[in-house]
Amino acid sequence: MSKPKHHIFVCTQNRPPQHPRGSCAAKDSMAVLQAFWAELQKRQAYEQVGVTYSGCLGPCEHGPNVLIYPEGVLYNGVAPADVEEIFTSHIENGQPVKRLLAAESVW
Amino acid sequence: MSKPKHHIFVCTQNRPPQHPRGSCAAKDSMAVLQAFWAELQKRQAYEQVGVTYSGCLGPCEHGPNVLIYPEGVLYNGVAPADVEEIFTSHIENGQPVKRLLAAESVW
Image 1 (cartoon, rainbow over the protein chains, first blue to last red):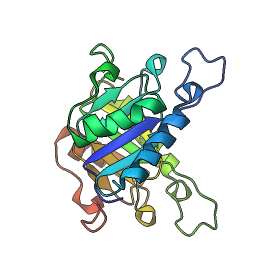
Image 2: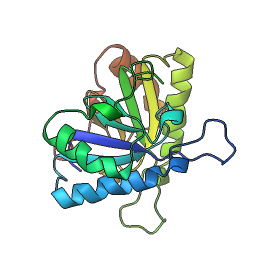
Image 3: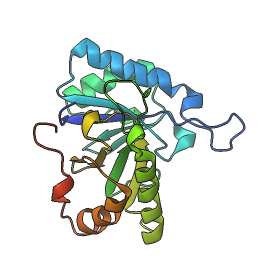
């Protein structure tokens, strides 16, 4: 990966089932990660976009969490079905997907 | 974690010992991650700095790799002994540590 224009981090933190914080992995964030990788491949956007999994990004209760740099936009509650919209609206057209944005109290 | 001023990603990707790409984990990047977390605690910089582990950042042969956003600075070959300098020079004084910067051909 050369320096990407947008770098998408998908939290895949896991925790035991009884853990009070829960985790993004327990909310199937691996499927979100795979959807991002599939979309990256579909669009052949490897030179412009990086997709990387990450450890905990903080607001576990609102996961799956997806963080995009350098703009520093955090999305909460992302599902595989949201990935195409994030690519088209945010990555291609520079318009973050408002309905998924983390609240100011969170990020 | 609220939105950090600097977000440090430490690659902790692992691969089998015989894998041709090697991995940052095989070069003890977990110790680098722990050094960043310890320095974060020492400086009580939780409001300004995020430290998160990540999957592969690309140039495995030059690892351990550390990527800092939003500035998009990639460091190669980071050792635990480099962490204090990265905090003091880069994070506190805005001067990236030149000797550790990834080459332009890499990033």
